[in-house]
Length: 273
Ligand code: ACO
Image 1 (cartoon, rainbow, N blue to C red):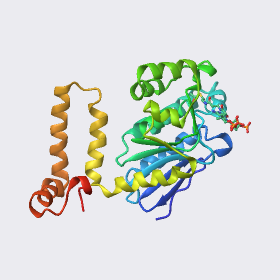
Image 2: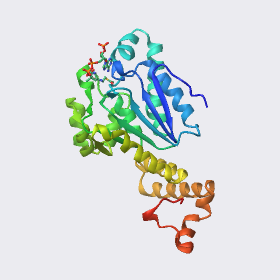
Image 3: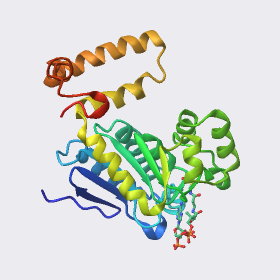
């Protein structure tokens, strides 16, 4: 299949893993309106792309993303409310709605600077791995703005309250290593191991039943703000739906393999062997 190309982002596919990068390394991958429009289009296509089993979001060069482009996103649209709104809608659409509901596993590979608005796509991804020396910062306080869009909500959800308050209100930077301690990312690794560790996670996810992984990630996100009775009901219906749409699960193939055939043990292998 001929891959679509974009001016501001880059797509590379490799054995089921799609590497999606903001491609403005000279601007440390700051998000211009063009980045938002390209991402909106690309994620819409990749969601239904059969070659994409796992999506890795990253940045070209030495930055994951330096936040919103202070010039192209903010200043240049100061007197153009329509363009500002168009860019704002696209920005929220891809960074939160499209990414947090992406139907396949998503991994943020934080290869360097991660500032401001970039926290939304970081939190929208299901998993995050960073270079241990990557620099993170909720730098909005320095620009006379609050962590807006949904950044404040993202960090309030993802971080312990004291940490969210401290880093948002002071704008102090922290490293990938600290981000791991804070629970903002899954793991921090040396730069030369970053791609390999990300690939290992992606390949592990690909070995699992894709429907179960999808339903699980949707369930984990959905129940967070439910009371226990609502969650119990939702999860029962979700499981029913999963069993109906996946013949192997509906047919209890996994249970048969474990209980009858004795050909599979969950602690030692994936659901589908
Ligand atoms: N918006 C616009 N341009 C940016 C941004 C940004 N967020 N970040 C970097 N750039 C541009 C710089 O202006 C510079 O452009 P130029 O070459 O035309 O002068 C280029 O990218 C390289 O930036 P440097 O500062 O020279 O690169 P360095 O590697 O020394 O530092 C760093 C990188 C730390 C990311 C620094 O550029 C920085 O602090 N950027 C601002 C980050 C920030 O606060 N983002 C949050 C914005 S607010 C929000 O997202 C809601």
